[in-house]
Length: 186
Image (tube, rainbow, N blue to C red; front, top):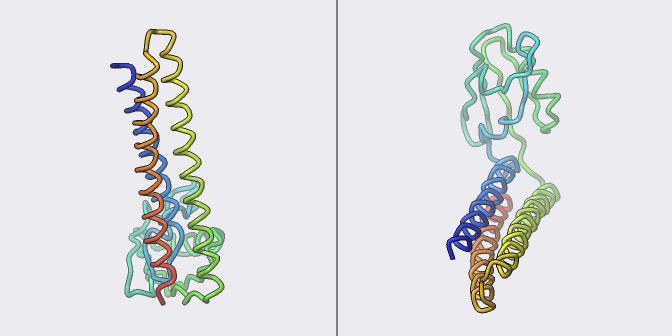
């Protein structure tokens, strides 16, 4: 039974990773409000080496529609502006010589629907990953039959794995519902 516990724990760890990855991906889907995490993936050419924007400047929100970037070094203003444009996020940075100001445009209804579709797609990817974890765990449990695990033990373990899968699938559905409501809110 110790092996079964280990298999269940590994499956839970894998499913947690799937949900964590989904959270990261959903944070990249903007909901019309300015959020510093929108720029988390922007890489800036920092004296020849690609560096995350957050490591060469302070990213903050001025209000619900405006982001500001205060670089640690003024010569980096142009590089940061270029990196944001090249990141293809649909943002138009304005450089005033001191800070970079980004006005986040209001989302159209069509764009909101596209973003909801993207969020649901990310949710499906997470569910596929969770089901893959379930399959791997079930396969490992079935392989324990050769080591003396009874049919009832296998059946009970598979039921526990399914309960775990159902709980994580429910978490994914809840995350997607929250994100969808956030995106569709005007």
